Length: 281
Image (cartoon, rainbow, N blue to C red; front, top):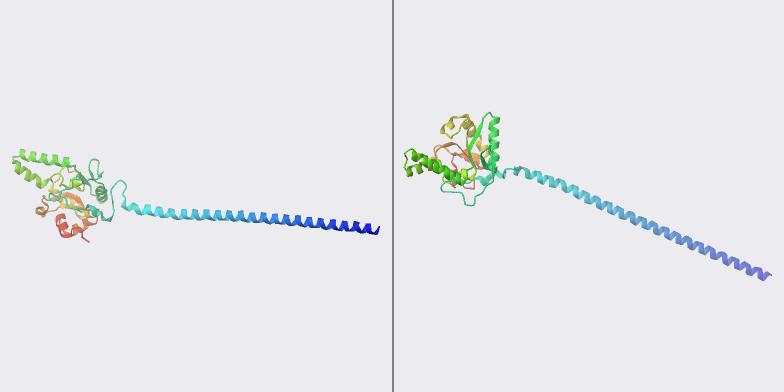
């Protein structure tokens, strides 16, 4: 009996130890799984944080580049006059001589813009001509562009008409040609063909006259034309140099850099160009 009791007791003790071991094993497994889950959650949170930070950096870069683009666009506006030509750097490109000895090249081309209902000029010259006319109006002076850009064909027709007119007055062909050449440039040698010249008169005038020099309109131009890049091209006393008669109405666009310098020098364009060339400071 004692042996039997001892055996039963031993069996019970062994069975209890196995249950404790299994429970502990289960607890350890559950704890490990929980740990794995926690680790996974941390990894996901880390990924989310990384993605969010990356997005923020990307947004910041985009935001920082936008003002630069805007500034670049704004910076380019002063040298771009929309429907007009290139404005800026004193328009030094417009400083060149056009005359009988210096005709326009065969491939010379321009884009024009209107300065009034019917007259056109090279786009940049037109821009400044309009500004000049507007400034004069603010000072109570009304200016009219009577003639501006002319095509080569128009120039030829104009030249021929004037020769025929003089012949009808009794001039010989040679005399008519010589006289017209003092007043009207041959096709391709006219500043009007370049689109850079304007004959400016009073609003009541329908022709160009030397008496324009006695008007307040001429006085205003004498004081302010150079501010807008224009010079009186054929001044009095320079006829032998320019090859043309005195024309107080004829204004040539040479750009806002050179016009004040030429005006101050008292030289005509041929003299100034010969003396300083493109090296004037």
